[in-house]
Amino acid sequence: MDTEVLVVGAGPTGMTLANELRVADVPVVLSDKLSQRSTLSKAGAVQSRTQEVLDQRGLLEPLLALEDFATGGAHFAGVDLPLAHGRHRHPWRSITQVVLEGFLERHLAAHGIHVRRDHELTGLTQDADGVTATFANGRVVRSRYLVGADGGHSTVRSLLGAEFPGRPGTATTVAADVRVRGGDDLVLKHVQSEDGQWARMFPLGTDAQGRPLRRLSLGGRGRSLPRETPVTEDEIREGLRAVYGARVELLELHYAHRITNAARQAARYRHGRVFLAGDAAHVHLPIGAQGMNTGIQDAVNLGWKLGAAVHGWAPAHLLDTYHTERHPVAAMVLRNVQAQSLLMDTQGSGDPDLAALKDLFVSLLRLPEVQYYLDDMQSGTGIRYPMPGAGEHPLVGLPAPDQDLGPVRAHELLRGGRGVLIDPADRFAKVAALWQDRVDRAGQGTGAQPMLVRPDGYVCWAGDPDDLEPALGHWFGEPR
Image (cartoon, rainbow, N blue to C red; front, side, top):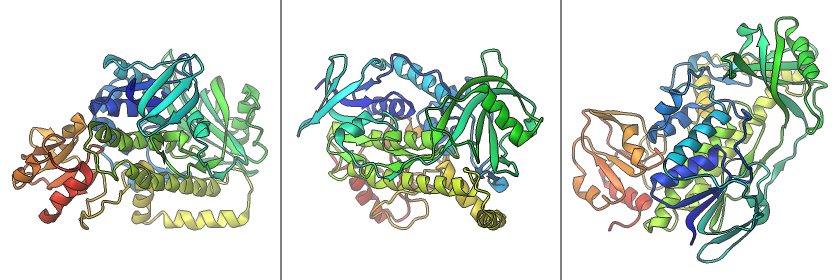
């Protein structure tokens, strides 16, 4: 073997996975067909749960130290969720994909993992022992496992012949990085004109001169053009006038492209020794900052499981749980994005029945439970994984709360990429010792909730002491 895991695609998903494997002490090769990292902003925000997992690996603090990233509140279909503001320790932050990619690439390089660029995958075969990948430059890499994190037009997915069912794109909207004058009071608001055209602006950091940038989305009646049609400054100016009148003026267009409303998801995330993650596994209209964040969560879920398999202690079912846990999450994302697109009338139909539906929806949003549900869904904090045999404790399956455990927080205990048994009363030292090569035990923390936390930060046991040993065996294999 040239390496244990080959990751194809060095976007946020691929680089997060490479770091997870590094933490798990697993040799990894990270390849990308591009000769250099893209300078385009692409995705524009990092959600609360993603920030939690970055914190769990000690990456959040240095990332936030790069600049004063703008924070924002939750919304659904352009409708503000005011009761959700301030619910999470880490609020939604305007951290672009290009900034996150640069940060992760520098972090990996500091630990000896360098992206192999100019590596365009052209073929892959797998057998009982591993996967052989061939590249256009003549290189061949043999690995135990391969992960395709190579985007919506995934070569890995194509070479696998993997099913990618769903809906093709039927309309396009414009996404542009701009510098504008005016409209400060319109940021993060979905504004629609009487003739069915709409716009929304998001904070996007600053340019090289320190001047504020915004991500502008434009769509609606008459604005759906073929994806390959260039977006011009005149088109942006006309779209701003149509929605905002004279309140917003374009000063500079940095980058713009058209996005389709295609919604597809791979039928299977695992194909033997090959896995799909990120946009290679699911694509959708970018609403609510859910695309990049879902891919990063794919990587965090898969990384420790591949590590367990490489190190030889993974239970037989463990790698299959990547699909069973993550496929429903992306399916939910596709559904809520399609629902939001409809409620926002992104095609500018002006359908009065749709307007009536949105009026009813807005009235439902006055209920706190509805706001909390939608916020948890989009932020990723409400994702609950099935945990067979772990009982009915309300924490089981959810992200572990960041409990104060005296000298450390619970999330800090996860920085080694191992499981953590929080045992404040020192009741479980004997059973924990059987798995001490892969699970750490934290015995301090007055008033802390006893729980077993997987390396990805999800609670897999809490409550009944009789369920602890079965949970350890289910997720961490046979004791040594």
